[in-house]
Each structure stands twice: as structure tokens, then as C-alpha cells.
Length: 410
Image 1 (tube, rainbow, N blue to C red):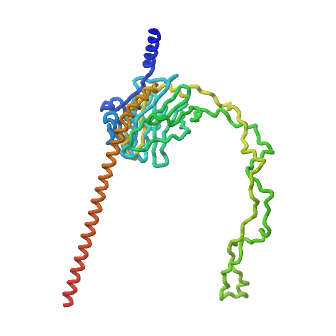
Image 2 (image 1 turned 60 degrees about the horizontal axis):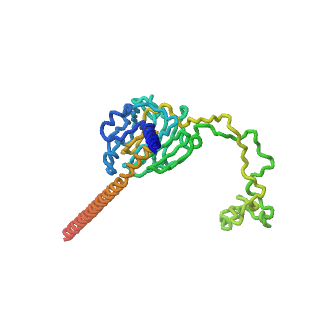
Image 3 (image 1 turned 90 degrees about the vertical axis):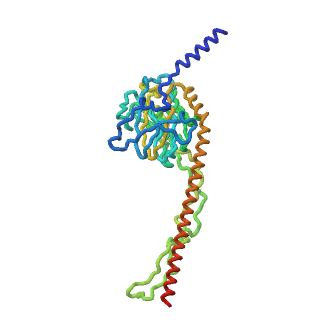
């Protein structure tokens, strides 16, 4: 029994040691500036936005929900931070997780993070800089409200072929991407699974395993018409005797019409309401229909299985490459790890305080509603006073004019 207990303890200890936190940033104080490098991109054009440490007007914990925030409207934002040591996720889970909040009620802008190689040029980092993974929400109006999951494979960026809706409210949310060494993945939002699948199926990084057989031809007797003419349906008698146009019964010959000079008068033509067009028999299901013909599949000679789709040999930094029309987005609690449990523990901490954030938000919205109502009432009262003053002024003018006329008459 003692030996078994020792073995369990050793296994637990090994699990703790084997788990690795590659990067963690909580933005709890001003020391973030020592760890992050703001790119010089767009500064010469005057369109580079300023990052600021900030917390929203509603939060669960003022320190833990504090983060780095975009602060200027219609600006680009570029910023990176390198790991202490570059990592290779061979045979390990890769977890990318971060907390984001749009207190400004974002209308158009990105809220995603990028996983970068250690070779990234931090001072020249832009949207064109190579990256490994791009992950997170992207919002623009009502048409774009999705969660990006983009993988770089052999130099090309590949978008996920699934639609994952993102959160669009003004509260904080946590986005989690888990990539497993068996080439499967999972996307979670606030700890809830939103999409799972395989890297091979949900991205076009590899050619299709199977393709249409070019030698397979559709049989000549293949029936691909789902409907057919009803052989028992017959054209009604007199159908073809109904003209498409008839003389307008309301047309009248002009009084000045001269048959000898103008020719024989004919009334104008109008569409015949009785005309039904060319007759066609009714359609019935075709008993010989075999469905839409498709060629047989064959193995794709260009397909080569890659068991290392999930793997990145040089994971060395994270970065933000954003454009925001309306600023105010807050990012914090960034985690890159090979431990799903570590990511879940961070989510559990957030869940313990999210109800307080919601309560604070509701109070702020109610206070805002009351203030707007007070301002509306004040504006309405001012408008009514103005109307009364204008009416009194007009009445005074009329009274003065009446007195002037009376004096003139006398």
C-alpha cells in the first residue's frame, strides 16, 4: 500500500512538472510595458493607436479584470511580447486563451490574438508579419460576428471552414483554443465548447483524401430528371384558339380619321386576359429517376497525410494586430500553455467573479438610463418654455399692432 501511494505521488508530481506554462500575462500593473514592444508601424502615417492600461466601468475584480486597452478611434494597434523561451508543442496539447471585453459596444473591429514565431521583428510587426495561429472574435456590423481560427501551414494562412459565433455584448468573455497532438481541436467560449473537429477536415491545409474519378462516366441510360410530363394529362379543347392579344374594346376611332388618307382604322391591341400561354402537361414524379449522378471517388494521388498538422516547432511570442473603428477593447489574462487544466482553473476564477461584473454592469446601465431620461425631460421642459415664450412674444406683438391701429383710427 505504501509503495502504491508513493507511485501515485510520483505520478502526480510528474504531471505537475511536465505541464508547462509558455506565456502568461495578467496586466495587473504598469510593469507590462517592460514585457511588451509596441510596433513603429503606422506611426509615421499618424494612424497608430495608443495602448493604455485600463479597467472597464464594470468588473468582477478591479485588478484581475484590468487589461491593456485600445484608446483612440479609427486606429491600428500593433504590439508583441516574446516568451522567455521558445517552445515546440510536439506530442503536447497547445492551449491559447485570453480574456477580452468590449465595454464600448464595439461596432467594427478585431479582438483576436496571434501566436508568433520567436523570429518576429517586434518593432516592425504589422498585419503582414508571419504568424502561426490567429484566434479570437471579429465584429463588424451585423454581417461579421465570428470567431477566427486561422492556422499557418507551410507559409500559407488557412481559415477554419466552420462558423463559430462570437460574443458581442459589453461584458468580459474568455476565448480558449485547444489543439491536440492527434490533430483534433476544440474552441471554447467562457468554458463552454463551441466547436470541435479535426484539423484535416475543418481546414484546407491538405488536399482532399479522395477526388472524383475522371474515368468514370455517366451511363447513357441514367435518368436524372426528377419530374416528368404526366402522360395522362391532355390539352383542353380550344386552348390554342385563344389569341395572346385582342382589340381594345374601349378604343374609339378618332373623329378626324380619314380612311382614304389614313387607311383603314384598327383599334389598338391589348393583352388577352383569357390567354394562358403555351400548354404544358402537368408534372409528376419520375419513377425512373435515379438521383443526381456523381462520379465514383478515388484516392487523391496528391494527398499526403501529415501527422504533424498540429505542430509548431518555434512558438516564441504573442501579439495583437488590430484595427478598431470604436476603441475601448480590453485584453487581459493571456495564457499559452500545454495544460488544459491550467486554462480551466483560470476560467473557474473568472466564473467566480463574472456575476459581480454583470450586477455592476446592470447598475451602470440603469444609472445611464435614468440620466438619459432626466436629460430628455429637461430638454422637453426647455422646449415647452421656449414655445410658451415665443407664443407670449407673438401675442405681445399682435396686441401692440392692435393698439397702433386703434390709435390710427382715432
